[in-house]
Image (cartoon, rainbow, N blue to C red; front, top):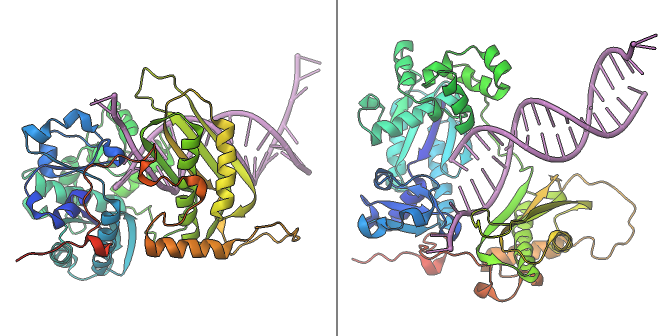
Length: 431
DNA sequence: TCTGGGGTCCTAGGACCC
DNA sequence: TCTGGGGTCCTAGGACCC
């Protein structure tokens, strides 16, 4: 038996903890560069603002409907997430942290689980201040579906029985009642059924989660894929997707960004790419891995129809796997020079570290006395300084030294403070 | 004018091996 | 006219997730 705990409209809820005046108001959190909506309060959803909708399309609601828009504050959300996860873990013996605001908890054998879930939920609300929904079911897919039910029963009364509001346990439901819940759920709301497969299923005459659950797994495998087959079996109550107890090491690490405005010069791209390498390599060292390949890409904006378009990437195999920022930056800049073409308005660039391997596993070789081959201590010192004095306190010089005046800097007009991770930005309570 | 970032898994097809 | 069988590895592309 599994539980899925997740924060409602998580980013918005985090912002509301520190600005209670946002309660009850339509609030949207924007993506990087204040580009599009990535979290919406229920009130904002009611205004018709869609997930991923471009900001400029709903900006007018700030005046017309009292909409509050905020720039993304991922430092805050990450810290709130850590706190939330540690409390959610109290629900059962095993936990898989699935995303910034969701975790699966293995709850097999936990007595009075529904009541316990209510207590954990109240604790999350009181200690963290973030409202959560908890769904419980015999498979991860059914736990996800139960979580959807819990949220819908809360937000849209009448869509499901009222006792499912906030906490929904499908595990102790008679079969006929479970069928009724599945029948009331759109197939597109099932975990694992996205836009494309959803369209194909609807074209085949299916409408609800119950329709999908009644498909024959072998047929589904033949006509679609083993992935969808697992979804069908999980809906039928047969567990196919394991709980991933320990976080696995990443197989690739990326740092990619759209620019605050388009840039043309190689120099600016070099600064950006160097910075991306620095961040990616830092993540790489944190998980104690080495990269075997590095990929760099640059492209123009497909949304700027008037611009000539250009997009290219290049993958460079590294002679030795490495986690050395300076070495990786050298490689990345050479790679960038190979794909850069003047005369385009570049909108985005990125770096990916691929073919990652454990740093403990090293190919032995003759020491050919390569200068600077091992800068592990320098990297450790860089990481320590940046941890203590903030991101970017030390970096490769090719990342540029002009700070916020950098041409490509991200636009973030309404970012809230780092309330919980920076002494200078602590909130102040006044009597 | 203005449209995010970071991942995973699966499959098909080609190259290559004996 | 007639052209094997069995396998691995790699990559690109598609689909999904939050």
